[in-house]
Length: 506
Image 1 (tube, rainbow, N blue to C red):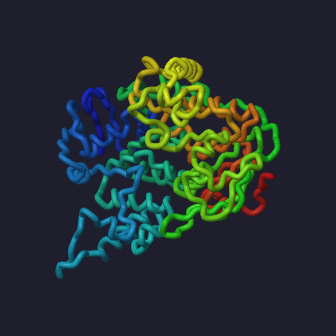
Image 2: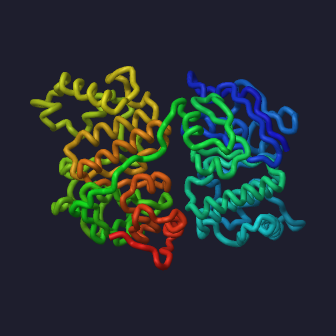
């Protein structure tokens, strides 16, 4: 089935999320929709899937104009979507999840689970999915759960499949398997829309590439285009995708984490007896699929999570049991993974956000009164140094783009007298140009002799920044390896396996 979008325009108040977007996806084609987070890709697909109604434009299937009032209409027309965050019921079996929304009954009025199991087996055998229809979804690995999502769509006879950032929660091996599945679907005649911001994946599987920036189509590209060419289309200027850094100096141990254990209120272990050291002037990158304890580990180091066991020391001084403010005042800079929730106050001005956590510092406050001139001078200096694109220091931080918001957080944290810098998902949701800037600042911080921890689910980022790599799986560290460890080995470690003969870093 051929899919065509003509002049799709979607507004949210004054914001134009999609601005007269047109594209065509032929049967048996993988059409990649490439763009940064916030470019309008997912909004466009939600219009296609009937979740949003466009103010202008048309959706055509095999040259017939469609009118979708909701996802049910889209599914009945042959459109399926595999969402970034799976739409599965964890306590249901695979067969039960697949039949949700299209329940069929036997002559006796019972749910036809046998028919659903048969359908799952047929699709699994056809595409080599190896999915047990009676397995509970909550017991399945993430990559298999994604196959269940695909089976759900195919069981509804979808001839157009939309994959919305499908690799966000996958290991490299699971990503490779998904690419193979997409090729099989293409060969079977399925029209595929693949939404992503990852250039490596685009070039691997796409037949055609449409690039969206700020809600508009800014060009089409061939899969043979270089990463630099694609990145330039995405952000509108040339950018460097290579992190330029010299080898680490290999200084003394600065941060020592010994047997750190964190549990939730129900006693479930989230961080399991984790130990590692970070030297002065080195970047230790922590890799792993999201949800394997990385968040709780960084928050425990910062005093945001209660520590059940173990200890953390910095330059020989105990951090365990100290308050967040005491830890920050000890020289720890922290970029949280969710800048909007934990890194900024959106209603505050840029200048106010830059002095957060320093209300008792003499440089900004005296006798309980804010020293406005000093605060404003500091803000102007950091706006220039970190290239924060803003009308001025009095602009509310929440009005800026994600990249500029992240620069505010970086500017505040890196302007401390640092003894340790912790950056969690430092480039999540920001454009390629801002990523280039953030990476340079992280490396520059390392080069001053500060120990750095970078937590990222983006393996390319981990490999580019790291001097050593620690891989987490189910709350524990599988191993700590050199930065030049092959990607396939890192991928196996992210799935909990340390291949025999793998070199561990000192």
